[in-house]
Length: 265
Image 1: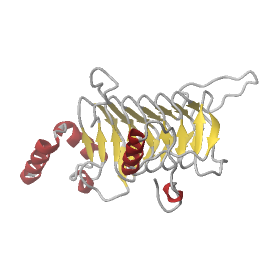
Image 2 (image 1 turned 180 degrees about the horizontal axis):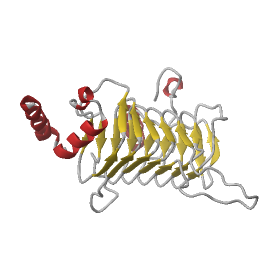
Image 3 (image 1 turned 90 degrees about the vertical axis):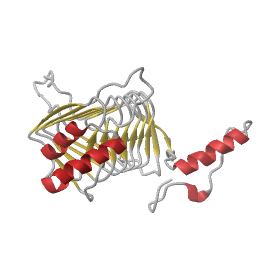
Image 4 (image 1 turned 180 degrees about the vertical axis):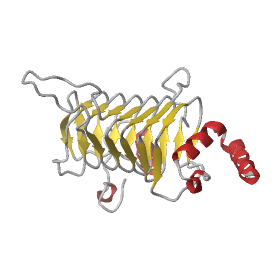
C-alpha cells in the first residue's frame, strides 16, 4: 500500500490532478484490480455525487482513460466547476474520453456508453436516465446538451401518457456544434455534422450517405456528403494553404482524402 501511495504522489506531481477525488471515484466505481491503475482522473473543482453505480472498462485499464475537468475552456471568464452525478447508473468505456471544464455528467438509472476518443468541450451536459450510446471519435463543442429524458410526463387529450425516457445514439466521427441539444429519440449515423444551436430529437439513420449536415430547430438535413476533418495534420495543411492563397475561397481535396470504411480523415 505504501508503494501504491508513493506511485500516486509521483503521478500527481507530474499531472496535477485531484488525488482524493480520483481515489474515491476509482475505488467506488471499479473493481480493485482496475481501480489501482486510476483509469478515471479528476481535475479541478469537480463535485462528486455517487451511489450504487459502476464503470465498465472494455479496453486495457491504465492511468487517465477518462479525464474529468482536465482542460479550462476559454469561452468562460473563470473555470466553471464540473459535476459527476451517478445514482444507480452505469458508464461503459471503450477507450479514452475527455470532459472539459464545467461539464455535467448525470447518470440516474441509466447506461451511458462512450466509444474511444470521445470529447466533450466546456459546459456540456450529458443527462442519462435510460440509454445513451456515443461512438468513437465523436466530438461535442461547448455548451451542448445530450438528454434522453423529458423528466416529466404529459397527459395527452386522448388520455394517453407516453414514456418520458428514450434512447440516444450518436455514430462514429460525429461533430456536434456548440449549444446544440440532442434529446431522446436522436439517432445519428456515422460522419454527421450538426450545426450550432440545433435541436435534434429524431432518427436520421435512413440517410445512406458518406456524411450529412443537420441544422435548425427542429433539425433537418440540409446537405449530403459533408464530413468533419478530424485529422490535425490535414487541418494544418488546409490552414497553411489558405494563409498562402488569401484570394482563394475553396481548397480541392484529393480523392483519397475522404473517409472510407477503412479509415478516417
